[in-house]
Structure formats: structure tokens, C-alpha cells
Length: 118
Ligand SMILES: [Zn+2]
Ligand SMILES: [Zn+2]
Image (cartoon, helix red, strand yellow):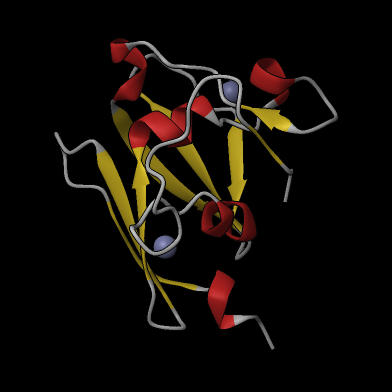
């Protein structure tokens, strides 16, 4: 059975908002600022093929999400307005990026921060 911590029940990213929300099956509401999602884009173009994922501060133009496409039942493909659409975000990875007050009381990720690939 799939871990309820990495099973998404609902995903919201209202147009114009700069935050995506995920309702996880364990009852947690994930808060994912676009800046964090884009800055931690896991694609090879942004990050290379191996090693930890580094936060790359995005420009304002890179913060508008155009589409969220589920890939199988394990990941989301995020498509951005500037055409970038190669990032596959596994649910485990998205959960690790959660920026709600409980998961990240110290606030938003910053330049140079590294997180593991999931
Ligand atoms: Zn990327
Ligand atoms: Zn959280």
C-alpha cells in the first residue's frame, strides 16, 4: 500500500497564486511556493544528472505555473509559462519540499541550499 504521506488527494494552484497546495492522504496540507518549486526543479537541464538538488533562485518570469500534469501515480510534471516543462516532481520529493509552518518553521529555502533527490 502506498504511504499516505506521499499520496496526493487534491492539488490546487489557483491562477495568479504563487503557491501550490497539496492535500495529502494523511491529512497534511502541503504548501509549496512556486519560487521553491521552480528553484528546486529537479530536471537534468537545471540540476545535471546526479548529486543533491540545489536551489537556483528563479526570476519573476519563471514563477507562473501554467499546467500541472500527473505522471502515472508517482509524480507531477510542472509546466511553466516560460515553456520550461521538463521537471518531474515525485510525490515523495514534493512532500520533502513542503513549506508549511510545521515542516519548515525557519521559512523559505534560499540560494545555495541543497536537498536530496527523491
Ligand atoms: Zn528544470
Ligand atoms: Zn508541511
